[in-house]
Image (cartoon, rainbow, N blue to C red):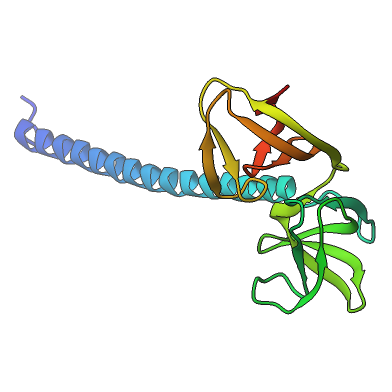
Length: 197
């Protein structure tokens, strides 16, 4: 008769301990994998965030070469004028004035809601509020037009500025000047899409 040196219970206990050890190692690896996965997702998110910011900056930055200038015109109410300032701030010193239809040169630098004008006054360069600047030469209109559209239309204080008042389809306004998308009217600045004969 052969004698067994180990009991079956002892062997089962050993096998059970091995299984627990393997299970423990598997759980540890799963935790490590989850941790690595989390860091990987964070890094991937950060990378895409940087890429999106770079794309936005490229799309909003001027695409013009340094030193080049472009024509722009002032669009404001007849008889009004727009201040030209020494720097891009409403508190900056006024160095000149512009009336509707005046032509200037810009290098397309925009700062604090102002557009940079090149060689505009005896002080040199100046800044003008972008709410009065257009890049297509305004045409004299001096005629009455009708508000069109499916609902009320905003008459604004400046180009894309605050609303001055609401107009409804059928209202009549006197249009003084038109430049591409905007018209300066007796009611304020109105998008040309909402004006008809």
